[in-house]
Image 1 (cartoon, rainbow, N blue to C red):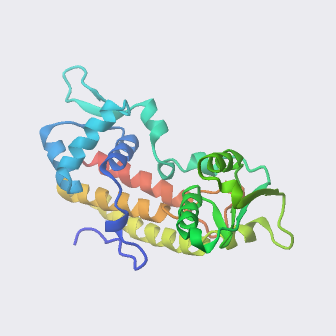
Image 2: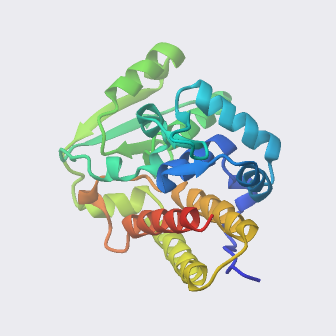
Length: 269
């Protein structure tokens, strides 16, 4: 086996595999350009094992103005990410934007009491709050370092959330430090372990990649697996402001290695 596999008992890459559009956009953004020769296009399809989805994703991204097809000076045509495409990338692809935001020292807490007969409503609400990267202090008490009044207003208008919930702002939680709150509300220990696993696997694969030449198909396979592994590791990360990062948090190292991997892959294709 050429590459060290990213196998972790708590993660399934088949379940978390990202859509072709997001993968293609990230790859283009991190490597700069992709040559659109017939051979390269075929390798993309084979590497991602979704040739039809790949072609549809490329057409969709171009139609949306997120990538551009360019040819200049008799050179082979290339695809490049536009400024609009950079803005459209998923948060995990540009986590620095969230890590670097300033925290004003205020917690926003959402408390709700939803009757058992409305369990489906309650489950949908919990799913929505998790997509907003809120942390769960208790089953009916969620917390965020960001001002979520606008989101609360939208939910009140669209789903009558104000019938069941209250939104509070607090400067502190008595008896708890801010970092203790973070550790309680988000699975930071699990996240740190997944980050460490990713770093151990892909530092080794990066060294294997640069140690000697590899067939293009092998390089594409590495890129496909690495992007899926990165998405899996970042999936649970709340991307909190840097001021709230626990000591064991290694998100910036993961993001930096992810970019190094994609750049090295792009250079070898």
